[in-house]
Image 1 (spheres, rainbow, N blue to C red):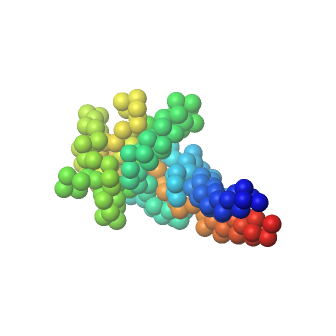
Image 2: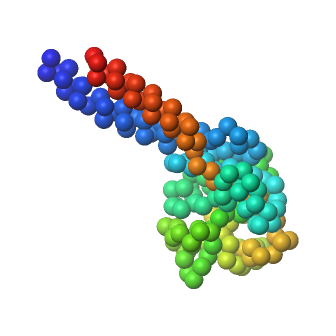
Image 3: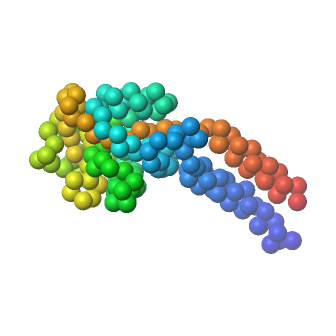
Length: 189
């Protein structure tokens, strides 16, 4: 029974780690139907090809319960950017430049609400076909997903956009309940 006891000690830890992985990989909310959806950590990114000015993109994201997307780390840029590239190459999305909820402010990249983004300012590529400016965009114009900037006050600059939503909390509650149920079964045995 020594083996059984040590196995039982590790079972809750294993289940909690498993739950954490499941929650992070949850799909996006059921109500989001347009565009390509990319779950990443605690967020769901919606990639929309519709070309609109930045203000309109922000309003569309907000009206759906989200915000204009923020890619706060190099890992999030890689994950979402590679999905955008794959979908663009397959013809699923037509845009190659996308508005984000990030700005180039005094030599730093900040989210629209003023939070620091850990991606260094040096990762913004200069692109001759886009105007310089404070808004940060995701671009495929070099063939790879990169960040670039544009003047977001110009209403005639129209690009696709990326919305960001929190992963559904109802799914988290259901998974928490299921995890507690499994832990209870394990404990009873």
